[in-house]
Length: 254
Image (tube, rainbow, N blue to C red; front, side, top):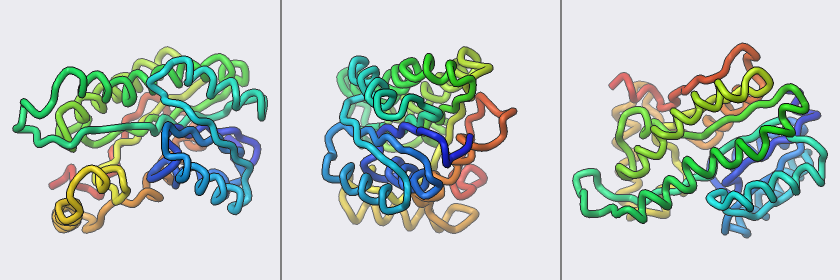
């Protein structure tokens, strides 16, 4: 993928990993479509950052859990730029519940988390499949989580949804080949607002300190670390698809 010519759609692009990815792509000269569900102020800030970085950018509001919104998002990008080279399925939600608290989750929690984290990613991939195939060369990157590999994380529902996303990655890689490559990146602990906004601040800081102490690389992940991995999957090895790669400061070795 030639970033200077590419059009990349990033879902959940108003903060965290999505925002870092959008800004990094813009810095490479890409045209970036930033999807967001509700955080308009954050999306507008990232839009400004992308334009300041030298890329063209646009905002598209829509909840990926809604199939019509997914199709309308893709239609808006095609109307603006006429093509889509890359999709970053970054939109995600969770509910923070200790795994031992089985009563802390109900069916509605699972359904909402799956609706965004799994069904939303599927719907976005389906929406971009035809225009990408027409180009003959596309790439989809699913932002999953180490939670989906190890069964840990903010809640059982979240971990299960990311495990499903990893399986979705394999299935889509088979289905969309040879024109479209599909891979997943599974971050470990990353210092973004995703969990900071969902738990007491001191608890969030303590988890980060413990993680840094235990991880072999003695560091916490940053949004830009994951953004670099995403750009590798977009632009990297043309022989690579169906890969689910963990980026966790080596925590899986502990």
